[in-house]
Image 1: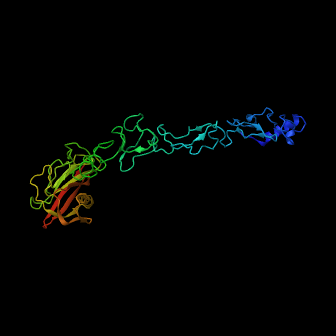
Image 2: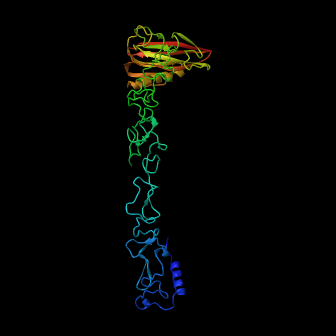
Length: 412
């Protein structure tokens, strides 16, 4: 409530209309205790007025309240008014005027109570109420749209106070608990997943404690064998781990390997296999059969052509070749096989840090290298009713050329 000049004018007018016409002695001398004429008051005669009559709330504790001055005017300094923005008397605050240092400890808005006798903290943020508020990263189960940051590979982050209780992991209490703990887990399936920590979590199919490829567990913690991609160390990969379909559950080719024209054991630098088929000079396949690695009757046969250098140990292999250093590999035919075949070999050479160079048809190793631990595959599609002649030259360090060829055909 606020005091106005109009109220004073009304009081003065009332005095002029109803008071006795005699002038107050205090106007020229001392108060006589009788309010007369235009006097607002006289001594203890306040005309029945109190602090409340002048729009104040109450008397200020320890003060005389509303009193009369020696010149017969009202002294309101002993009254306090809640809402005038001035902390008076026993007021703790007033409007927007708050005690020094008054603030919400965790953010939010603090106000003065309407009585001016205390603070209103209902709009202050409280860590632990389960509601995400300004200044908080999270609060129990309320994490907003937060996700697990790198290097984590997925999952849902947990708040330090994610456990609603008083004991155990995630049961943090206090103003500093509304932050994320990315390593916190309440079960194996929650929290953030870190591929490479040696623990299988969440979506992970495996976790071997590293991020290296070619060891059975991919860098993103999926089983490499059965993913449909011939990874490092695999001879084939048909997208499953089922035996009897041309590729073993361990991703080795089921069946024998073909020399492709080289003379064993002196110069058979390269051996061949066809996933799901018996290799030889001619390999026929029916669209959709085991030799067709896409497994569909779609007007083509997708051959998985497996290769191995020198003395690599292979399922079904007998009388391994002499391990000689390889100097160059050239794809003669077909042109569409050059890229996939040389890319597959390049991937292995990069993995083993073996230097090489290549052009569109040939991969060169300088110096020549022993590749006895390298095996891999590349895909070659043949339309139904067609055949493709596959021809590759492999040059070793002493000038021997292994000229291998194979005819692949597809029938509906």
